[in-house]
Image (tube, rainbow over all chains, first blue to last red; front, top):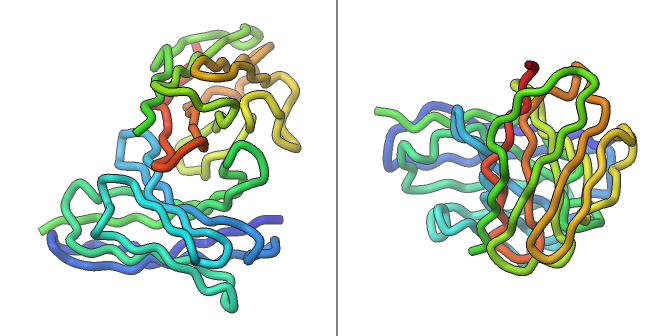
Length: 119
Length: 107
């Protein structure tokens, strides 16, 4: 069974930096693209970023391009999200998700880690 | 960026009802359209992928259809556990995007 466990979410001041981690198990990690998706409190889901199986391709939402960096370590079955220049608009629950084989769907999700940007 | 527009954004229905949610893409996305169910405090769950394929383990009361820019999610014979927020999501072109969500509430 797919299990994704996010960590690293904390309260950080505007302009600060943070690194989120996601530990994966239950599937062959290096076969799959991985994503980060966030949900601002009371709002909908927002796709943030993806990384290909080998880390060679990364993509970002316009709202985080240039500030966030996604990476992965296949030897540790982990994916990371490095976040810089945080603003209050980045306050959200951040989910790690595994891409499935059809329609680029996200067929495995963690429970999320909360990030609060506040002074 | 491809914009995804869901309608309605909220829906009130009773157990046993049949409901339909529509998702419209601002550009052609073939059948790269997925539907998720999200309950408070839980991880989102994929219901339908590639427009019409039922995810393993999901009840056959859920069905999806459409291609190009117009898609629908239908839930037959609503059960109490179906009351949640539903999102469409396009995986055709990055940045991937979600619809704004449809909150399904008990009437």
